[in-house]
Length: 187
Image 1 (cartoon, helix red, strand yellow):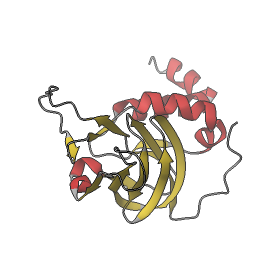
Image 2 (cartoon, rainbow, N blue to C red):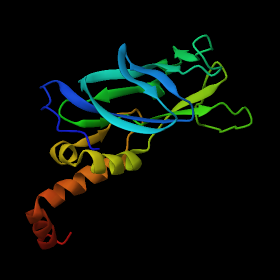
Image 3 (cartoon, rainbow, N blue to C red):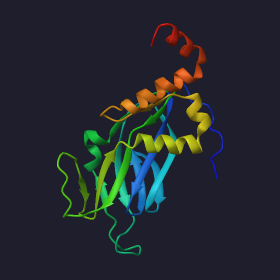
Image 4 (tube, helix red, strand yellow):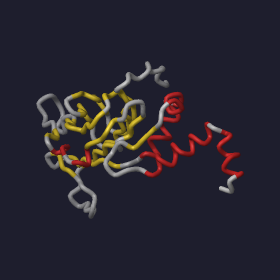
C-alpha cells in the first residue's frame, strides 16, 4: 500500500530519506536525539520523515536482543555514530538523501581497505553507503508526487554526481522548450 499525501513542508523543513539495509533486527534508530525508526526486521527499509533544516547525524542504533527474550543482550551503538560518515545536512524544501545505513552481521574474516567499518559489541557492523540510485527508484514508486514537486539532493558528506545529474535532467524534461534552445545553440 502506498503512503498517503504529505502536508506541505514548513519554511525551515525538508524531507529526510531514511534508508536502512540490515541483516539484524533493529529496535531503535535515532538521528540526534529524535527517534526516527523502530522495530525494523532484517531487510531493506525506506521511508521519509520531516526534519528541520540544518546539520544532523545518525546518533544511536539499538539492535534487537541477539540472545532472545527480554533479558538478552541488546547491542547498541553509543558514540560510534559520531563519525563524520554519519553526519548529514537537511536543506529546507528538498528531499534529502544521506545514504543508506547498512547494518551487517559481524564477519571478522572480511577485510575491506579504505572503507570504515564500525562494530557494535562485535555483533554487527554499521556503515553509511551511498545507494542513491536504489533509493531514487524506490521513491519513484512510493512517492512520485513528492519527487516531482521537490528537488532531491545528496545530504551526506561525500557528494553525489548522480543526483546532481538526475535533478538537472529532470529540470530539462519539465521545460520542453529547453531542448529546442539547446539544439539551436548546437548543444
